[in-house]
Image (cartoon, rainbow, N blue to C red; front, side, top):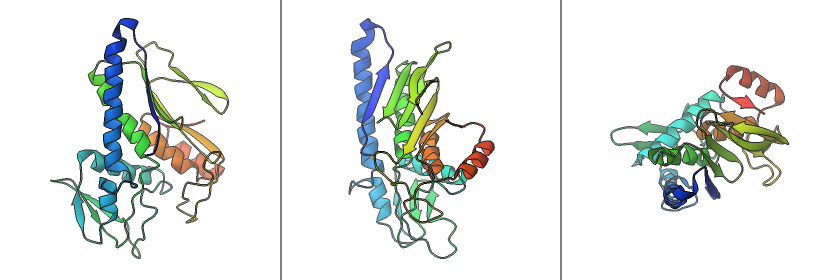
Length: 243
């Protein structure tokens, strides 16, 4: 994921030592997810998937399988604008370049050149995943961040939320996630699945959603939508907000 993660927790001074230990547990879990989901680590599960030939499969962890299931869901919900397999070379008229098999969890390649890149969804997935650790330790008010591009906020009832600046406006996140995609830092780095090139239709887009996984994937997808496509898509997705 090659991303700096952060944990902010609202607490009382006498609980600081315990919560520092909780935060370190979160960071350890993120480091472990990196060993599963990064395509840049030779031994990761995604790298093993990317070495498959057509018809071959590999057993993967529940976490990798779940992230790929959500990637498939995001692909459907964005009408193909989000595609974790954009680097793959599909066979003619192929509906899907990979399949998810169960008992045990396995990923099967349906093409000779399968290439999975979870860079547009993995950060959000990691935030959602480690939020379970905080809930397990009865932490109810927190802000998790993957750089400043994807944030997940939780607040108790009545809390105004965590202030976040988006498009020079302050929004308050309360039990939701926000993600931003833009070209200011990395240039055109998001693949346009329709134009088959690294080009953008937006200069920057912010998306809020109920989960960090979908906020991350949706901002990636929205970055390649024209304003007209974005307006139509938003009307079909009442649970998200384009800022």
